Image (cartoon, rainbow, N blue to C red; front, side, top):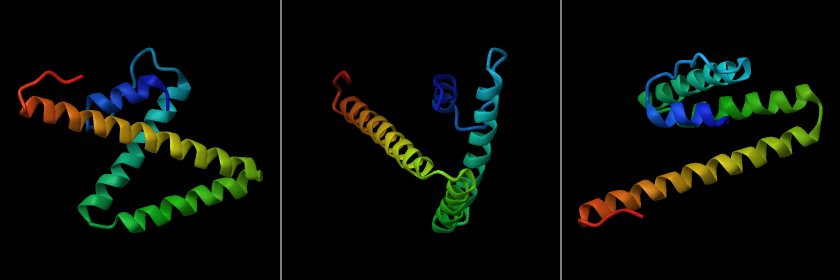
Length: 108
């Protein structure tokens, strides 16, 4: 994901709005991200994350078959791994900072 999109995502939990200096590709990315976040919020509200995961993986499978290259599947899995790593690192840093705050020390 682009740095601008990640910065807006980190800054707010409400839908991200395109900045004036966003490229057309970044604006499309923000639109897709807002749609995906709305689906995730809906799945959490209705306690149906497994259904959403099934729908999303079906959609990814359609992308792989539609673009006709096994490399697309590898690229999707590589990106998924990178995103999971980024989110896990962020969560760990937030937890460490919160623990440091509770213990009255300065976070790293």
